[in-house]
Amino acid sequence: METEILKLKQWVAESDNIVFFGGAGVSTESGIPDFRSVDGLYNQKWKYPPETILSHSFFERWPEEYYRFHREKLVIEGVKPNRAHLRLAELEREGKLKAVVTQNIDGLHQAAGSKNVLELHGSILRAYCSRCRKPYSADAMNHGTGVPRCSCGGVIRPDIVLYEEPLDQEIMSRALHYIRNADMLIVGGTSLNVYPAAGLIDYYRGQKLVLVNLSSTPYDQYADLVIHEKIGEVFSQI
Image 1 (cartoon, one colour):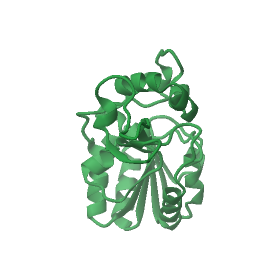
Image 2 (cartoon, rainbow, N blue to C red):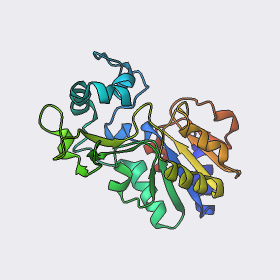
Image 3 (cartoon, helix red, strand yellow):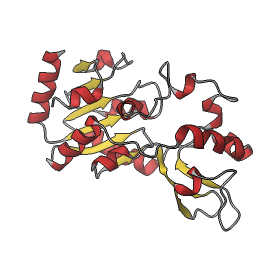
Image 4 (cartoon, helix red, strand yellow):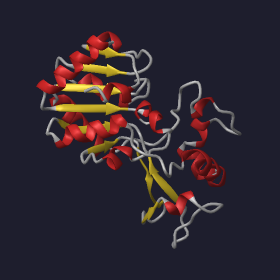
């Protein structure tokens, strides 16, 4: 694996138009569980499957049950960025990294110092009224009991993309622009099984597609470099 990391380090040194595309595996080293691993949220016992609880129709119909799950499983206070987040922020400051495209909703890239972060699935750190769209802080959702409500009477909801909801087309367009024009695309901490986000890789036109993930992905055979290691350990060496 040392040879692969040395090659990645060399490519990073030679590139000045890098884009990073990441998923839940980027944040697991910060203590946030992913969704699909053996210990992930989707394999824990719950009254309803997490996919169901995190859907638009479930939130509309049973907001009380949604918020019980939200406060127990999605509140991430006190979590810190790890070595991958920090190195990506450094690469941006060095003028090498042009954008971070993330499926994560935890805000850890921004906490590490990254500025150009495209959040495909929104952020759990923001909230708004589902009726009048008035913005709220995460505190309105994360503490207390019952369903948080706006002054207009509407239900306050997290600013995330729930199942059954479309991705933000403006953010998708910007992500496509950066990926299409990148000379190097580093994909890390994602199973690449969730669409339409995973399909963004198909728009990369360069010759330096790097996949860093603990397990194999459907795109390994198309990558120019594959590293099956913890992403924090890899980024600490580049």
